[in-house]
Length: 206
Ligand SMILES: [Ca+2]
Ligand SMILES: [Ca+2]
Image (cartoon, rainbow, N blue to C red):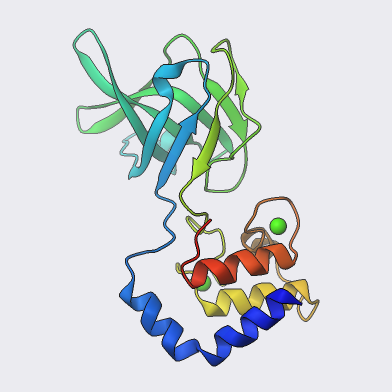
């Protein structure tokens, strides 16, 4: 199997790979997104992951990617992609940093999706009157838990090994591990995920 050969090669090269990875600056970050194809063309563009600052308990845990700047009269803010704790995703909402916290506004319409993952869904967005729904491209996919099977906050060779062990039925993996192991997010855990994880570990980001 291609993935097994690749993993075996990586284990042999582990010291060199570790040195190489350490020398890189987060080679497969997913902090940046590209929203495109939205009927509301104002929201199309590049988005950056930033902390969502709030004093309201309901919004705690919200993940936010900030996109193109926009102004309504004297109110200046940005379009945002937001993930709420109930797995609901929104794009096309307007966020303003005001009074020391972020405030969310709905302007005319929005786009919605559903996913428990901490990275935005690429497809499957629906529109609430904003014309065509967007798609989202991500700069790599090893962010916010995806690929981090042992949940130590980093994606390493240990995670790749766990992923391979799940795929080859050496271990069943916990539900959390299996969710993190679905690196290509197609709903299953197979050699495609092992390949992608191993390739990203050596810097071959998609
Ligand atoms: Ca890990
Ligand atoms: Ca998969």
